[in-house]
Image 1: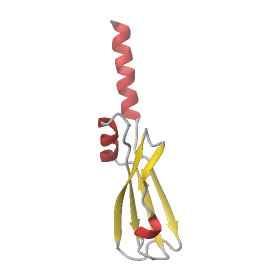
Image 2 (image 1 turned 90 degrees about the vertical axis):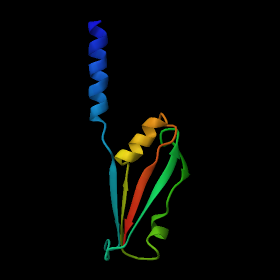
Image 3 (image 1 turned 180 degrees about the horizontal axis):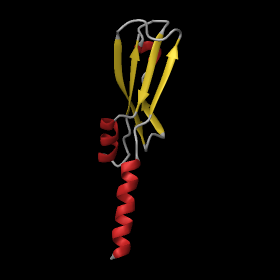
Length: 96
């Protein structure tokens, strides 16, 4: 019984250590204005197979200077957890 309690505690602590990842890319001089476009990227099988991935250059609407922020937000993680990582979305935001 004590081993089961310890195992449950370790699993709970490991679940709390999971964090959201975030990547930022600056193209040209970076965002020059306050325009912002956000889209979800769609992956399956724990992110191994892309189904629909956004194109940051197209999202920037032809701007030469923009900032791309790709992240796995809490909502993305919640959706992934509900689907047991069969569907694993990320979010891309482009500021230009």
